[in-house]
Image 1 (cartoon, helix red, strand yellow):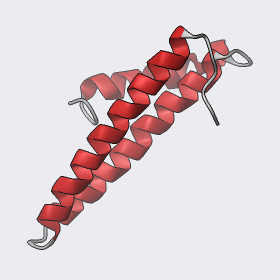
Image 2: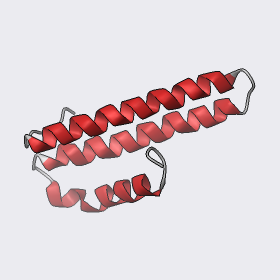
Image 3: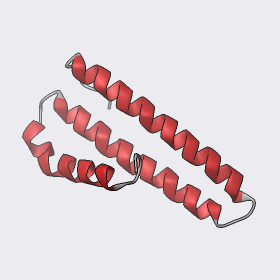
Length: 91
């Protein structure tokens, strides 16, 4: 649920709906960061699911999902740290 569950879907929908309100503010980079995090994580999990349909791809699928989870965790922590400092995130 952390990567592709309904909380993530709701969060990305809210980001798309509200990003016009933060245009030209430091929060704009945070919205973009969250949207990109969702779509890239979704892509990696989708690739892992496709790999899981093959016998040889199952171990790689597990590694890919683990990598995606760690990557998302890094992006969440990095985003929170920069948000607390009121700093924009890199493009």
